[in-house]
Image (tube, rainbow over all chains, first blue to last red; front, side, top):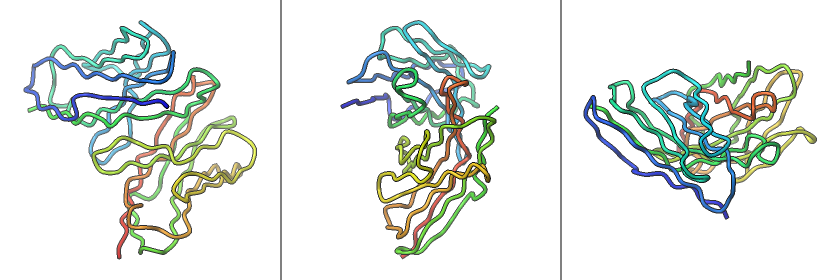
Length: 115
Length: 114
């Protein structure tokens, strides 16, 4: 069966510090990978998605970047955090193409607080 | 562009009572529709999905949803709510033309009272 991991679970960082959140998927190959941000009381905003190694699409302009160095690893980064980067970050995966057809499976999330 | 509206921000229901959560979508062609549930501080869990065929779909935890094209709706229902159903529920829409990326509604928080 497939499993998705995210770490850390909780993170408190000062403004201007760097960020690295990691997501890994087990039990599947060539998944589509996604990073979402969920602000308090709001829905999910898609930040990045990837259909393969080194292939990253950015959905919104922002202070963040993403990388996919391996097939089942997805990293969310920032060089300098802003207060507005606080939120709950969720990684998700889906099977590629029609096989997945949008059925996404989510990790447990990372709660980021920028002070 | 695809979008989802969940008209109800918060619903309170008694344990054992029925529950219906509303979802309206906007998309020109046949959408792929999903319901997810999120417990506090957790990730999202897929409850059910509609791609094609029978418009009444069954999901996990006793939930079902009905796709009504004429009303652009995909409402979620459960006949008898349990205290463990207290959570936030998200409706989402995707499409092949949009690379199967999902657009999520703002969510409905369900409170279950004893």
